[in-house]
Length: 173
Image: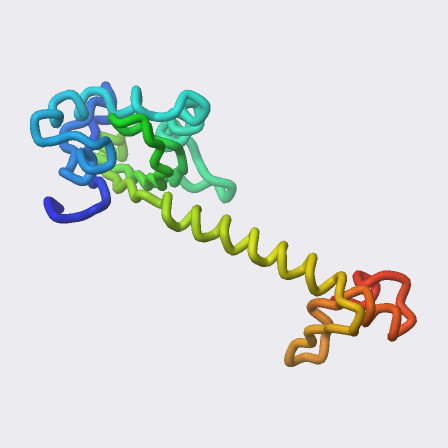
């Protein structure tokens, strides 16, 4: 746990105080070892204000039941975490209930993963796909992508005209 880039944490259920936060927290916040005590007590204060309600609701969801009527034992929430230098990290936090013999939640354990790079790559991919669609849609020659089941997945305007379709969407699917 001490060598994980992710942040492993343990919190009491009753007062929601964190009992343990791994060194990964320090790296996400841009702190050295002397910042541990502050981080243990103030993790939620570093969550972006627009995301705090979702974080609190996710933690509170452990008191409820899921769509099948089963007791909820875990949550997943994404939020932005403000680092000491002012930069923003996008986090994906998963929490799991630890119950006593009577079924009452006594602790919540979890792991927070920095997903900033993944989100940056996904955004770049969406931008690249959008640019490719703009270019191929404007090409004067017919371009189409047909899958293994012989269904159109992409058709540009020129191909739609060649196939006497009203729009490219009329052929896709």
